[in-house]
Each structure stands twice: as structure tokens, then as C-alpha cells.
Amino acid sequence: MAVHSFKTSDGLIFTRLLSVGWVLLILYACWSFGGQQQFSGLLSPFSRNLVEQALLSAFFLVSAIGYFKKNELLAFAIICFVISNLFENTSVLIGFPFGSFHHSEVTGPRLFNIPWLATPTYMAMGYVSWMVAQVILGRQKRSSWSKDIFTAPLVAAFVFSSWDFCNDAVFHTVNKAFFYHHPGPWFGVPVSNFLGWLFTTYIFYGIFSIYLSRQKADVELEYRGIIKPYWLQIILLYALNACAGIYRNLLGKSFEIKLENGDVWQSQIIYSNMTLTTLFTMIFISLLAITILYKQQKQ
Image (cartoon, rainbow, N blue to C red):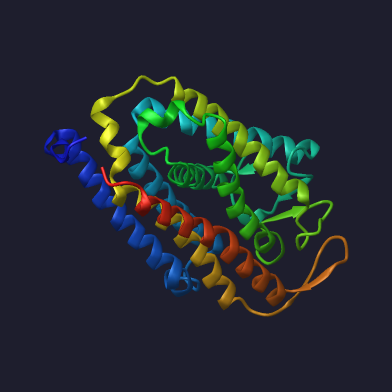
């Protein structure tokens, strides 16, 4: 599409949403790199988590509104909400697919067996992971939704699960956000947890991918797929989340952690391993996506 698309009211709205996206990205960076620490004495862990989820959710909504139609955004939200909550609850009840576990009281109010703060996180990071995968596969244009219908969900599932892989060991051992009844090899996190997230995210991404493939082409919105700053914002949010995790690991205190099965770990060992894991997964994915984004042929 030609640049004159931005002269339309739709293009003006998109431009304004893009500006809001940059503001939210800066706020998230400020909160992640120093903000949380500055307010640690004033806010409870739940309140600090609430602020982070609010920023992530705001970015998700602003960014998604800029690209998807209302019915497409609603479809993503419903699919993500139903599938993620369904499988998390079945896992708490019967151990499938993540393994038998329960959330601790520090995670706040529940929706059935799952903290209600978990769902906005899944939606925000689920959206970001999906969009990063689209860049890697070159599926930014709406006309490309009919291609790689089943490949795109698989790539997105790995992008999302990499985020989970880099964080769950800390959440389980240090933060004590949840507890596995049968601790596994990844610092107490069982293999079933990560396979479960691959399975769960592939299911809801797969349903969403099929849904998008059946949407009618919209020439007026096609230009949004080639606006590099828009896609860069999303990749940077994913990268910022990774860097924030590394930053928290570097600031982490050293103490001994004893798991339910009797295993004992030093927190610094966990922090160091999560930092390396993040570097070779989420940071790599971010660099790969940015490289692909700017190597694409100019349109």
C-alpha cells in the first residue's frame, strides 16, 4: 500500500496508537529496570505484579487494536482465556497437561483454581509471542494468513514457551508463586510443565490461526503489515521482558532453597542458569526477529 494510506482517518488512528505503544514501551522499561526496586518498600509483591500486568495488558490492547479488527481481537482473547484457564485448571485437578501443582497465596485472588492475574499475562505474552512468530515467518500481511496455517502456531508456541522456560524455575523456587507436587529436573520444574505449555499454546494458536485464515481480505488494512516500527515495538517488548528477567537475576540475593522432594539449591545457581537460558532463547529469538524484519524487501 502507498504511504498516502496514512492520510485517511484509519491511518491517523493507527499512527496515534503507534505513538501510545512507544510510551507504554518506555513505561514498561522504566518499571522493569529500577521502578520495581524503588517501590519494593511501598508496594506488596502482588501490587508490583499488578502494575507490571497492567502495563503489559495496556500494550497488548493498544498494539492489537492497531492491527486486528475488533472481532479478531475478541476471538484471540476468548480463545486464549478459555484454553489457558481450562488446561491450568485441569492440571491443578488431575495433573494434565502441566503436571500436578497448585498456586500459592501470594499470587492473589483466584478464578476457580487460577490467579486472575495469570490470564492477562497469558494474553499479553501470548499476543506478543504470536506476532514475533509472524515476523520470523514473514506473515505480517493479512493476505499471508492463508499460508503456514499450522506452522505458525508451532513457531509461536515455541516463542511463548521459551518465555515460560526462562521464568518458571525462579517463580517456583525463589518467588514461591506455585508448587509442583512432584518436582522435576529443571530446578524442581517437571518436564511436563514445558511440554504442557507447548501443547496448550499450540492448541489456542492453532484455533486462532484457522480462524484468521477464514477472514476476508481487507485491502485497506493490508498496509499495516509492512510498517516496521509497529512490528519493532512488539519485538522490543519481548526483548525487554527477557532483559528484565536477566536484570532481576543479577540483583537476586544468595540464599538456600529446599524443594518439596528434599533437593537443595543455591539461589545464585538458579539465577545464573536462568540468565544463560534467557540469553540463548529469548534474546536470540528477539535478535532473529529484528534481523528478519529489517532484511525484508522494502515495499
